[in-house]
Each structure stands twice: as C-alpha cells, then as structure tokens.
Length: 227
Image (cartoon, rainbow, N blue to C red; front, side):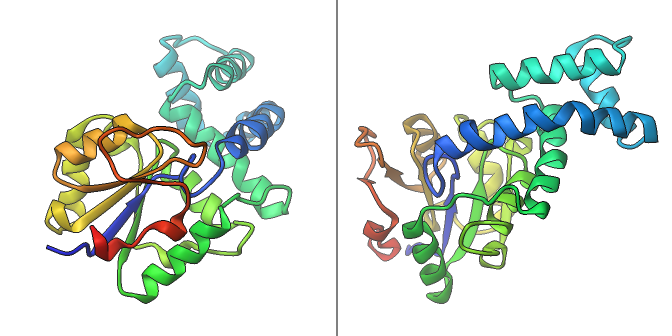
C-alpha cells in the first residue's frame, strides 16, 4: 500500500529544538507570572489554576505558589497538561503581538506545501499541546501554515514513545497504518510508530544515528512515494 498521509513531529523535525528552549520557554517564564496574576484577579481560567493545584497535589496553593510551581516545571521541562495550557495562553499573546515567530525549517516548509499539493494528508503529533502546535505553524516565519494540516495530535492520545499512542492516531486518521508515514528525530518514537505498523523516516539534522529506520538530514530528501 502506498503512503497517503504524513504524520510529523515538530521539535528537531520541522522546527529547531533551540527555538523551544531558547525562545518559547524563556518567554513563558518571563511573562507567565504577571499574566497569571491578571487572570486570577479577573477570575479568568480559574479551572486552569485549580488544575495546577491538582497536578501538584497542593490543593491550598495560593496564586504565588501556583506561579512558583509552574516556573519550577518550566525549569525541569515537566510535561504537565496544566503547564502546557498556561504556556499556550502566554505564547498566544506573544505570537499575536509579533514578539514571537514560529521557527520552521525552510526545507520543511517547501516539502509540506509540495506534499499537500500532491494530495498527501498532513498531520502533526507533538508533545506540545495542540494549541501550541497551531501557534507555531499559524504564526511561523513562513506565514500561516495551518491550512496545510488536516489534524493535530498531542499527548492526550498517549506518550510518543508508546505504540498504543500511534494505534489511536491511526484510528483517528482512519487509514491503514501502513499508509501513514511518521517523521521524527527520536529513535524511540520511530520505534513505537513502527511497532504499530506505520512507516517511518528519521530526521537526523545533527548527524545523529536513528538505528533501524531510514534517516535523512532534510525534508528535501524525503520521497513519500518511495516508502
């Protein structure tokens, strides 16, 4: 069966890992305290405040303690759903104001446009929230790329190194697994996708080794029809 859909990771694949750790995380850390205080005063996103308390198992945490928890999670790169939600809200302001532009490699931009024109369905699967995914592509350095994609998946379907996550994505896309090509720079993610029957291609931009998978250092080297 030939490939009909392409599922791509973001960090290290379509976009630079450095963008996340050198731009997005510092921006959130810098602006989150004032943003959260404003929300608390206006009683905005109170359910998200409570979600932080619940995930931290600190039901009595006041606003300043919630801020401290979130900053600690940012420093430790904790994959907490409530943190991702708060980061997404802060980043949305940064993108909308023009302070942040989503980094996407030029070779990825060109390939994604070409693949959509060729009739491939394009999807995203990232550990970042769907909201964050839409922001990085919606406010990218290459303009709004969101019309290229048919759907987005985050860790609400499961962790990226677990085969069951890819089985759920296959079910959602509603194509046979072997008709979906997964792109990532992480060998454990590629392994999990392969176990679930997806075809795989690794992006080894930093000259890394992705044992057991076809690997390239640019989207320009990927021919979906060859898989």
